[in-house]
Length: 429
Image (cartoon, rainbow, N blue to C red; front, side, top):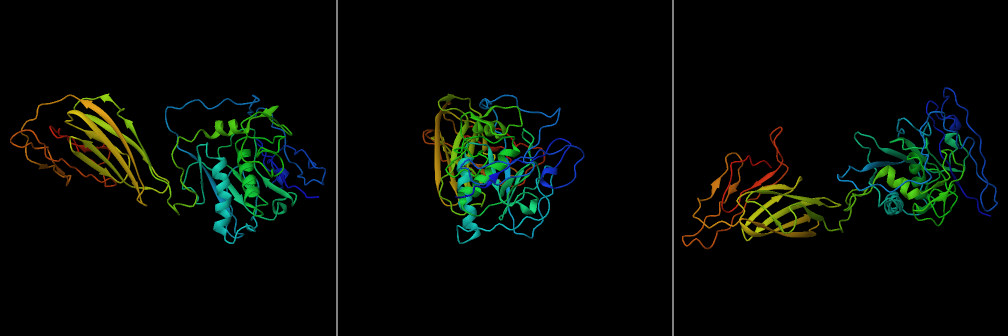
């Protein structure tokens, strides 16, 4: 009869640290002892001091389920989960809310020939399960800010002063700790199970408890057939937060927010660029009536990075280009019906095109000045000189490449004069 490894929540409380894990002598607070039997009746792995009660005054989520996150008007920066695959040599992160101390044994993979392939197979599950949430994974330590950390090792939890069969531990306080270090103690046997341990321990850092259903990642044993966080209310096992049920998906959404759309950056960087960029207009709206002067703002992104973003205005004959955001231009002297086309190109040559139509007040064609050069910009501005007959405008083109230095405090817009008029504005790149 097969044994099932047990996933455990950490026993961190306000003013009391990791006594249950043998990771220090905290001031006050006794750990509760708990032994759980596997549902199939087999001898159970167990953890002494699996959980402790939340001390008086600690915040808890009293609702049995949490409502969906309301629609947001602004895009929030994604939260970050830093994965550390232990090598048995590199010192572990020193952070608050750390479930273990000492040196984690190295991560040993048995299901793929190389470490990279092991990590990629594990990450494929994590990317799928976290696709809806506003969070990204990284294998590189962030330079600053708050982030969650998961140390992934193999061999069980004996080194962390817990039972050797314990699969993972995490600090826990019934709410989002907004950081902290959790541990996968028994990773490397297969990609799915390793990803389950990582995901559950990270969810404990957000305040999620165990549930009684083995089709949810938050099952207290490694769920063999689960495929994500279920979006339904499930009974809680061993409640410590005054909850009767838990909707794991909604609690994750509440803590992390919703992914705003577009491809997520890969934890491994760009190894194989197969996805085309995404591009859309922020302003103006399709069919809008505009003045002679207005701004165009684009939202453009790519999983492996953009090589160019181009804007054309036709039939007025304006073109602009930028390699780095923000992708925003001021258009001046626009006349009549125009089609604005935005094209995003990535390093692999994939491109995506978005178009919209606008209407500006129409002007009568007049003889314009010859092309001039804007002082200090190094860019030639074609003013749209008309021929003697005043019928056929010449092509106006301005290529402005982003990423150059700009004056302190100056706006980061790019200036695109129209075919009929210009105004003396600072053409910053």
